[in-house]
Image (tube, rainbow, N blue to C red):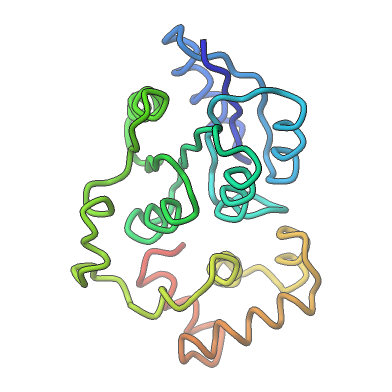
Length: 208
């Protein structure tokens, strides 16, 4: 039986994922948490075979968490479960080192299928991402998104959701000054001068 840690700040999602995996008889949930920092601690304390990660979590962003875990524990398999746009975030997740990506809009059985595939040594990503459609220019998303770092992308999301600099700093466990620096960089890279236009950009490109 494979041991699993679930990382999501929505209790209902954690419960649903736990249910579908445990019913299969192939997985045992050894930990649940709602933030990235706790995952680091859980991994130190328990031997996990698979970690299922929501990207939009506090303290350490999902993409940053993937990089850290893969850097420290390369044998652990990582499956991203996200409500965010597949073409942007599945590609980013793959680049960060994740083994698979499942949209929260999919049936729960997709989580089980992805987990089985990953534990069997395969990757599990949307076909367009695997085929490199985004890199070939077939994506309808704005190419300026590619200029943003993973952390800048996380800050952009929170700004577009209406969070203040202080709220973002608290959520991402960084200083207000650092948030302001990211904000300036985001505006410069996107050619945008205010939060209203930034929010429109994020919505148009399905970043929120």
